[in-house]
Image (cartoon, rainbow, N blue to C red; front, side, top):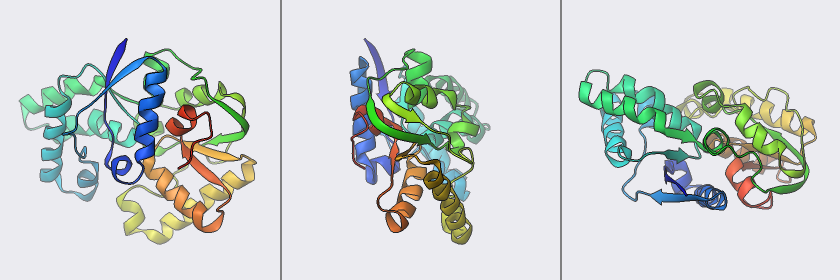
Length: 245
């Protein structure tokens, strides 16, 4: 039996705990033993984005101390994974011992769909959904990690579901963490376009792998199109497409 350590990001822990629970259930169904370090905290991504590098370094060092001995770390957030893989070595570049630890950790952390497809070699998670689905390409997952084929491979194997194309699937939804707060008008226009493309696709359900995108798109839909839903990939695959946000 394979064993992984779960990294559950702040947004999931505080606002979307069902994504964390679904991640655990999905991996357990696939025969993976999941460990959870209760002392884990934020990876430091918000601090990095806001320019608080001293605070970000403290978060990075704590993350490395907590997860440094784990063979494999899996997270349902591509942006957090990208932070650890890409930004930690840069953030700690002037501290050789910490940089080495960060570089050693980087190859051992995976975004959820990446781990399932590339490491476990699984494409069929046993999910079923009678309807049309579309997939949004979150920026950090697509551009930061180069992960695109993996989630779509998992979705293409969902029984009875039809995966339909989404216009502008690779275009940002307008969240971007600090971006949505600093430029609300631009962010609002971007998420409106994303949701209009979703409605035009004919899909019954929009799926994605990034909690931040889910909050942004889900918020727009709840205000303007409450009959249409967006769901994290982990929930969809773990609950046979019948899970609730």
